Image (tube, rainbow, N blue to C red; front, side):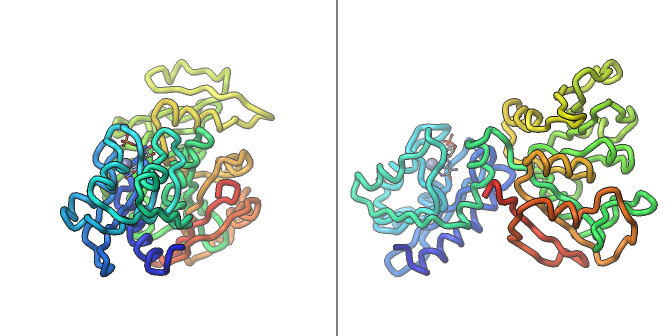
Amino acid sequence: MSSEFDFSILHQAARLAVMGHGTAEPNPMVGCILTNSDGDIVGEGFHEKCGEAHAELNALAKAGDDAQGSTAYITLEPCNHQGKTPPCSEALLKAGVARVVIGVRDPNEDASGGIDFLRRNSIEVEIANDEICAELIAPFAYKIKTGLPWVTCKWAQTKDGCIETPRNESKWISCEESQQLVHEERGCVDAIVVGVGTVVADNPTLTVRGAIKHRTPIRVVIDPALRTPLESKILNEDAPTLIVHAEGAETSEFSDYELLSLPRTNEVLDLAPLFRHLVTKYDATNVMVEGGTTLFQHIFKQNLANELWVFTAQNRSNMTPKINMNSLLTTLSTTRIEEEPSGVDTVERYLVNHCK
Ligand code: AOF
Ligand code: ZN
């Protein structure tokens, strides 16, 4: 049984792990902390970049000889395979670690097996089955299970659930702090998806600005009848763009761009093949959908949303939009996992229950 102390160190390791967000992917984010028999931390590390050292190796390197007899707290089962890096299970054994507390098992069958290896070699192993550690690898695990990336729908709304304002000022509903948060996340995801209505109304650039660009997300516009204006900023050179259209659309004007044709059911595009394409072609793990309401409605209906980020401003719009986001939200079964201020706005994070 893991103790309260074990969980507190595991959660500390989880906070380290998220420092790899944006660079660890497509690998999972992983954190590792080593403590001595007094419970003092002797080494810590996280998986900083895909292809480079795993969390355990970074922590072991910090601890040096102090790793001997230590307890290793690892948010994920240590790998037991030679991938881009050697097996962490062997490194823990060689360093003389006495006990290992693991957050969750590794869902990747190619790499897992670290638990059995350590037990076979007389190292005490505890599996905490911790929810925070599970959340850390949720996109990685979901992708292995479904072949789909983790889709986060993000929007900024007025208190009464509008993401449009009278003068097409939807870009400015949320405050600067909220926009900063969005840019930070944009710099960590593989793709940003919008509907053509948003391109026409707002002419967004959909690039990462004023935040660290750990990766350059592909801009994706869902444009069934190909009506994206050719002078749209989304088509500029700042980042790659993928234009998704309905089967049979006239594509000749867009031959310079990457195009993807999708089938339709009852006039609505089937979006799952797009997300699958983002995995097969780009190995995408995290995708952010930034609106508008029609696209959110289709993504919710097609059961493709995993997480929601809702920024709510203090003002009301007093408009009656075609789709109200407060109402649309009630069509999904969700669990609110976070609510905090973001400047003068409030930001709420929800997990969609089907993918928990
Ligand atoms: C760990 N510690 O920090 C991470 C693990 O190709 P490689 O060598 O980088 O292995 C990638 C796989 O290892 C990845 O798919 C996942 O199963 C596991 N990730 N394992 O022991 C870590 N990031
Ligand atoms: Zn490893």
